[in-house]
Length: 168
Image (tube, rainbow, N blue to C red; front, top):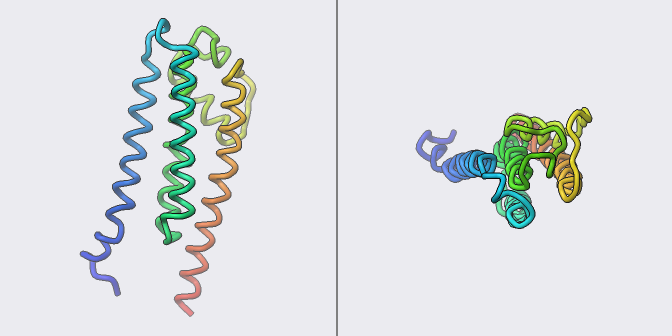
């Protein structure tokens, strides 16, 4: 049986990473959704897109290469799936500005977040529509949702399989 102290040590890095993902994605969304229309647009949007791509590649590398234990992968991927990735995509959409520069019909940060979740989960209601470069971002977000869901299910099955085999 694992001692509580060693259990805390085992999960410390995962919990710090989870908190970091939540804080970074929430701050990015908060800051970029409040950017003045004069500042938002092509340059800021492009920079935000590049930073998002780097963040996603780093996360994917971390899940696949750095984290060896599936139970830790499940926690981090769950946080990414539920909060981090949709918030980051919404932040990038916001960096392109409102006034139908990125998402037609989105006038408030909450509408960009709604669009991001609908796109990430590939529900696609169609009430808000991407234009310009944001069309490519929406496609990338949907693909990211598929990939992350597949990794999440794979890790969850590995955890369940390991628990079942350890009981036998």
